[in-house]
Image 1 (cartoon, rainbow, N blue to C red):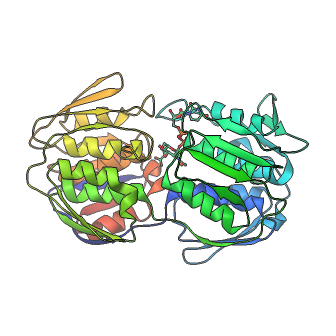
Image 2: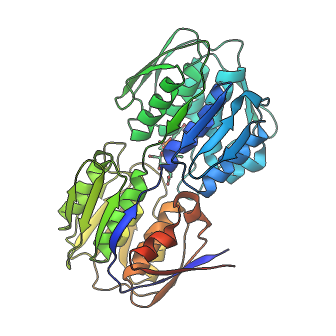
Image 3: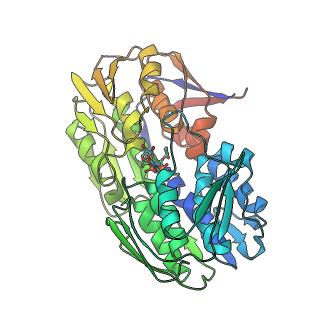
Amino acid sequence: MSSLLVRGGRSLSGEVEISGAKNAVLPILAGTVLSAGENTIHSVPKLRDVEVMKEVLRTLGAEVKESEDALTISSNLVDSCEIPEYLMKKMRATVFLMGPLLGRFNKVSISQPGGCSIGPRPIDLHLKGLRALGVEFTQKEDCLEGKTDKLVGADIHLDFPSVGATENIMMAAVKAEGKSVIRNAAKEPEIIDLQNFLNGMGAQVRGAGTDIIKIKGVEKLNSIDYTVIPDRIETGTFMVAAAITNGEILLNNVIPEHVDSVIAKLLETGVEVEYNQDQIKVIGTPEIESIDIKTLPYPGFPTDMQPQFMALLSIAQGNSVITESIFENRFKHADELRRMGADIRVESRSAIIQGIDKLSAATVEASDLRAGAALVLAGLVAEGETEVKNIYHIDRGYENLEEKITNLGGQITRLAD
Ligand code: EPZ
């Protein structure tokens, strides 16, 4: 397993270009299966998870051609609806293929997606919605098979505004006969991006971004040329990088309203944030104020920014409390930050952080994508050289992280295994 060596002590300053959104491009790439044509998706970030999604599409029979930052998928060649277990295990987001494969073939076969380090990650809400559209699921020895004679529109209420369940149900309902409604739907910007992508193919979806999404099924979906939105979590991560190193970073290719809650929380810590319609400037401050955070579904504070803020608040003045209300087990990075000297106590869903003056370098392990990013941020401000191990997690969701940090004056190098 390769690792990153991060030397602390430098304030980051300069400009960074934010890449396309991982959590928008994955469902959209899955959604290309719905059209029997050639689709080109632009602003595709070079990530491990995108590599896995390309492998999945090729396994299903699609041809996937790459150019600079675009992928062209010939979905007309898709002739299988089975996702092999080894690919399911590589990436949980393969679960996003359920809706499109049911929408294209009226059947799908996947192995149960495993949990991961942040929680069991059930798919009961995905299955509830798809069953409401007429899909029957049977559990075979090592896979879950879903099939239907015909998808029929339904009125579906989600017990929890699950992002993945909302997306899967949308991608099946666009081909269902008649009308569907998804109530208590997730409102993340990636849902709006998916709606725009599907409507660009000729679907009839309304209401994404609100908690009620209405869909009128159509017979056929055409090909599309589509550009995904910038990554709001990469945006937030570099905003924290400016704050934690007391630097000054101008972020380009961003959508400020997608990080409203992150801006609000950074302002509470005393950091300066200025923005226009596609740029954000963050100016650090020598003393970070302690704050309290509770993660919530969008537009609340994003769970995917919780680890990065824990690193920042580790060196704040005073006591902060972070409450994680989305995932059952998303505090593993607290153990690793403690190895760097942080004073953090975890009690059930809350982490109590007593700010200290300085973190110290240590050898730490990334347990998931955002925890890895948080440890890199901590390494940028710790005294000495921190080694962050298991950085394949980071490679899943951050494009050219070392290069971007180096261009901002940070000292970070990759240690191959
Ligand atoms: C998406 O995961 C994101 N991943 C996650 O980002 C993000 O943390 C999460 O949404 C919440 O914003 C992608 O978009 C690829 P959920 P998803 O379904 O869809 C429970 C990252 O770092 N739940 O909204 O899996 C679930 O256990 C990743 O980029 C059920 O109980 O999230 C969790 O507690 C991490 N039953 C909560 O809902 C279900 O059927 C939120 O899950 C589905 C979910």
